[in-house]
Every structure is written in structure tokens, then in C-alpha cells.
Length: 165
Image (cartoon, rainbow, N blue to C red):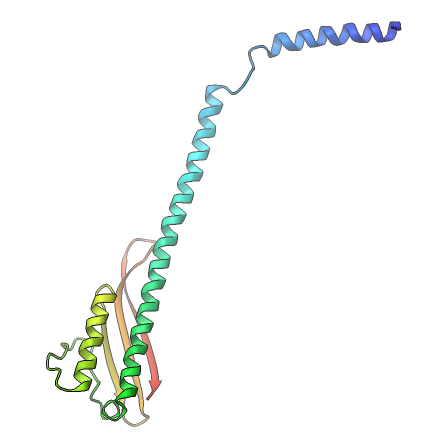
């Protein structure tokens, strides 16, 4: 070997030996590094869990609104099937009015079944109908109690369907 290579080999052996002496105690993670990593990871997992809970609550709210729409259109279909009675205002029922117990007529049966479905399908579900004879339109309102995911408060939601018979 040439003299230049021998000098470089000696220097690298000395540098390697010094590096090995300094690096002997640094063979992996320290306990503090491991705890910090665990803390950061746990915050990430908690954030994902909170996002999942928010997503479930929001999808529940959307499902309730879809159910309310279905029930409003169900009543509209019933009224269209019994158009003359609906045009005469026999399906009109106020918001706080009691559900008819006498089911001897088709319209009372329809209203009772519809209100029963509202109560069974929606939390505190209620519905009311107002038909205007002059322009042949009916307004169907459906209300329910909805849990708002952002602040955990309960709010009353109302959808309104206005249609010609």
C-alpha cells in the first residue's frame, strides 16, 4: 500500500474508534423519546375517535331527515289517492291537534296511521297538514327533535312539503 492510503486508513481507524467510543451509549431510543412518541400517537388516535363519533351523529341526523321526507311524501300520496276529500280540507290537522281516534273514514285512518308512523320513526315526531282550497295546494309539515353534534344540544327540526294535489 502506498503511504497515502496507509495514513488515511490509520486516520479512519482512529476516527472510527472515537466514534464507537462516543456512540456506545446511544444504541436506540431513550425512554423519554418513546414516551413522547406514545403521547403524540395517542392524541392522533383520540382525534380519529372524535371524528368518528361526529361522523356517526351527523349521519344519524341525515337519516332522520330522510325518514321525515319519506313520511311527508307518504302522506301526500295518501291524500292524492283520496283527492276529493283532501281538496275539501278533510286532511287538515293542526300542529297541536290530537290524533283522530275515530277511524271510520279513510282520511282519519290515514292521519292516524301517519301520525303513528311519525311517533314510531322520529324522536318526538309530529306532523300537521294545511290544504288551501283556492289554489289546490297542501302544506305538510313534519317535526322531530334532533341532537346537534356540535354542541350536544337538542333542537327541533321541521321539514315542509308544499305540493299540488
